[in-house]
Image (cartoon, rainbow over all chains, first blue to last red; front, top):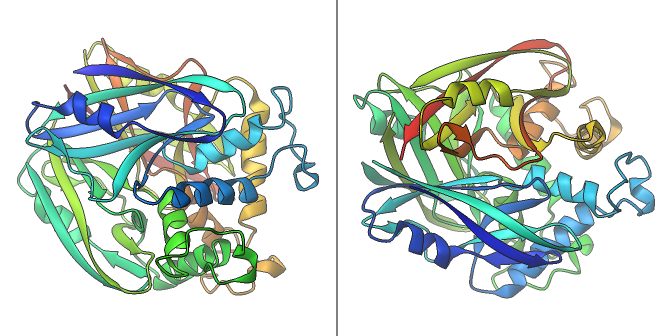
Length: 138
Length: 138
Length: 138
């Protein structure tokens, strides 16, 4: 079964989609859930779902590692036509996962106790993001 | 078929699980092996299995890129409740793979000649890490 | 079905393999395409296929983040036997994907409109790179 989940974002941040994934595999038995984001300026991520500070610090670290293109350290950037947040978004999208593969047992995704699945928005403006899903039986 | 492999770690380092994965797919024909680590402060990794210096340098580079939270450069970190090694571990876990998908032919994983599969521990204290496995037939 | 695609590289750069992947899944119905690169000094990547500046800037950023081993900032590197470009190549290979999982519907890979799939060469010398492919039906 193939499906596409839509996520409306509103600037850089993490949007949890664990519940949508659980619903997709519910009742499907044993197999593998595949998720892939159909964009190259946003990412998928599995991260801790307990302390929101973890997400805040992760975004802070990404911004420090990959400054906006109008930052003095990024003067060498050539791709500027879509705004100062676009090329950094592509770089972040290269570093974080574009696809995830998660084993499923008895219709339940085998995430760890503290893991959630997120769409990570890297662009400044709101976007509608598409995540393609597939379930393959073992 | 779904299984879970346990790996006991003892501080930051790489723990090879290639043999466990080979055993899991042995005799299973053609398909795909999925592996996912059920934690957000440790990673899976495919890397060179020849020169141990490669693993040493990779860990050294990660530590230089993501210093401990008590390092002066990390003063902006807010998630400190679990120790100075915890938030850096989450950041490293976001950068390295959480899941791997490896084609299997005739019951053998199609790794390259110099590739091994590893659990990478990012935390300072010993942990028992779980890797969920699945084999899907082509 | 399992296959291996060969890509001849000629120094650091992105080599698009989207057409080869599309051909592999053509006529196969609904399922998941798995691709894995059988090397630890090259990567797979999904990135924008529109503006070539994006690829140029991505390579520039990787080179700035992970300098060659003969750069003064990399004096701590121990793995030097295969040349100054080898250990940085392993580090880059740890950061970018080694495997991708892409949903397929009606024999077409569900990439986004602006996404292409690439082999990223991290080594200075020409290499023949192998990408293992598998298609699993949903």
